[in-house]
Each structure stands twice: as C-alpha cells, then as structure tokens.
Length: 163
Image (cartoon, rainbow, N blue to C red; front, side, top):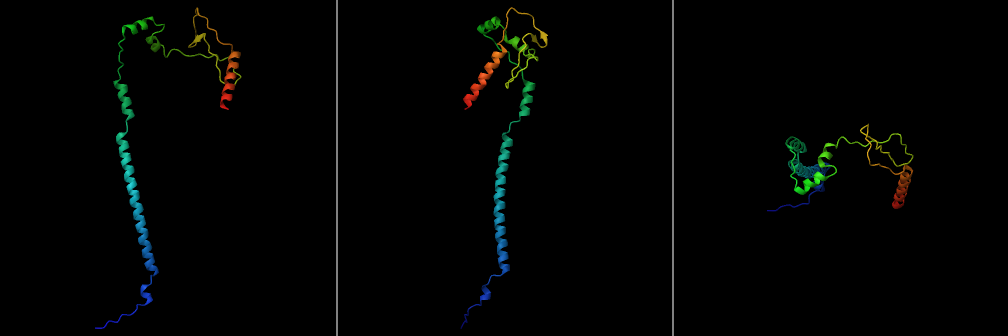
C-alpha cells in the first residue's frame, strides 16, 4: 500500500481571530478565578480573626454592672500601731472621706492678671461662699508682683531651655 504524504496548506495552521478571542477569554477566566480564590482565602482569614476577637472580647458593660451591684466595701482591720496613728492624726481618714465633696477652692474674682500665664488669687477668707471663722494661724501669701516676676523668670527659663 502506498500513502501519499503531502504538505498541508498554510491555511490549515493559521490562527484566526476567533481562536485568539477564545484563548483571551480562557486566560481572563483563569486570572479571574485565581484572584477570586485569593480574595476568598483572605476573607476566611479575616473572618477567623474577627471570630477570635469576638470570643476574646471583654464585655465591659457586664463587668461594670456586676461591680456596681455586687461591690461591698471591705472593712479594714487596723493594727494597734495604725489605730494609734489614726487617733493621734491631725485629720483622720474618715474626716477626709466625709469632707471630700464639701471643700471647694474659692478664687478672688476682683484680681486681674496682665500676663500670658493664667494666675488666680485664692480667697482664703471664704469657703463655699461662707466666711470662715478667724483662726489663730495667720496665712500670708507671696506678694503678687513678686509672684508675677517669678512666673516671668520661669517662662524665660523655659524659653532658654527650649533652645
């Protein structure tokens, strides 16, 4: 038997536009699927992180409510030395706690400051709007001109240190 082997025509091996279009679509689908799979993998990682964060998160509101409802102050047992110090103290801890909200610093509204630094004059004769009784101890404050000069010197020192 005899076979005739001939050379094929060049048109049989040509790539047409349709073939190129199909190849481009297939390549685009491959790239799209790879990108989609990568995004899906990252999303799963993020979901794992969020689940872990929700699991580990502390519920501050529940803790606060629990403290508010179940808090009972503990009585402190003082040693004999501590009890002696408390009895001999000028002001006791109990007095401090009981008077913590009643004390207020009163400022003299008539004093005017001509400096960049806000300086207020404390009114030592009134407390909570009421006149204080006279005491045996006389309190004297620094002269305001001297205080202003001192504050100017501090400001100058700060400027010199900043350089």
